[in-house]
Length: 164
Image (cartoon, rainbow, N blue to C red; front, side):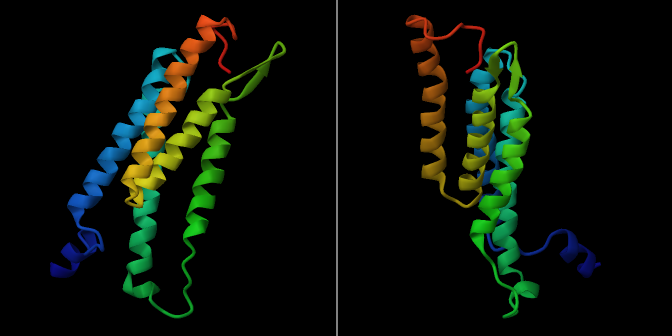
């Protein structure tokens, strides 16, 4: 029975409370970015941004835990944290590219795609424990989404229904 319990509740490098807070923060920060997209009824809104951010945080935590597992302590196993960033970046870029369309001479979905990419970066930062970086990136991203939209409307820089 102990072996079964150990299999389903293994010892982690990070305390479970820290893991829980990191994952919860990724949901909150991803939600902040997704909220503006949701208000504008974009295809990738609140839930999508939250899930992308949560997934990135989860990948980061899993990567940190894998590196510290005894089975990977062998000299022949090499950990390269940059590979994690590359994998998340390319995976989310593929997902975000799906939102970008060219229709009737107009490109739509660029901001949604960029927001998804930012949500992934924020999730990665939270998962790695870089909370200040994640929070600042989220705040700056939310500022860009909200404030720049208002400037575009005020100065009639773009058609309000177009997604840059």
